[in-house]
Length: 324
Image 1 (cartoon, rainbow, N blue to C red):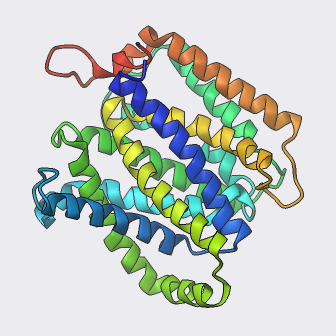
Image 2 (tube, rainbow, N blue to C red; image 1 turned 120 degrees about the vertical axis):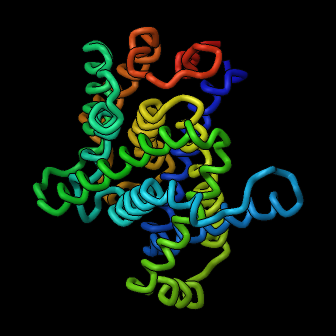
């Protein structure tokens, strides 16, 4: 099954997403390294440096970055950077309890945005129902505190809208840039520039440097390096999944991983809140999310209508998801 590139991309994204979220929580809530711009900046810098080294030694064949090429990726990069910052800044919903549940509606947002912005036909009612159940289950699994906060709703809707639209636009760009590494290259460059500009306002680099001087330990160094590495892999994995499958599959797998990582973190004593354990409501939400996802992929023939981009041999590459 994993020999299929589409299936492999889904599995890789799921595993990396869980691990990345886990180390995000460890570094930002256990070590109190609350500098999301610095973390994201370093992840993009490492990605960009790695690709440039690969280009230098002719390990990969990529054209150099130019502003003419980079402008095609600028809007998706801006949306991706902003949504990533909001997600990390509102990590776990500690300050904004409604933020994580709203984030779980990303797959439904992808379907709607693809319909309105890319003029795709809507999938069947069965698929819409399953996608809705995946979102509802994921939202329920992340709902830990009943607290109506207007700003958490605003930030949540903004983040899920930007992330969903970024995935849809990246998928569309893949028609013009067949090499996924080229998309990652341009996105890394654009996002790095955006985070550098953002730091001029937030001034996180100075604060992060002071933290490293006063509070750095070997355990923190290990976790921090793991977070940077996993962030790089997550960036690659989500682009790989979008281009090998589509934006809907990428958002669904990310959604399931988001529901599961809470329980992985709790099992490893990396609590969501410092004294709050998952309830039966959260467990029920995970069950709904996983069951709906399993039903979605078992009925893969029914969502073929969602796809309108064909590969040269006349078939749909997304149809291959779930096949052995």
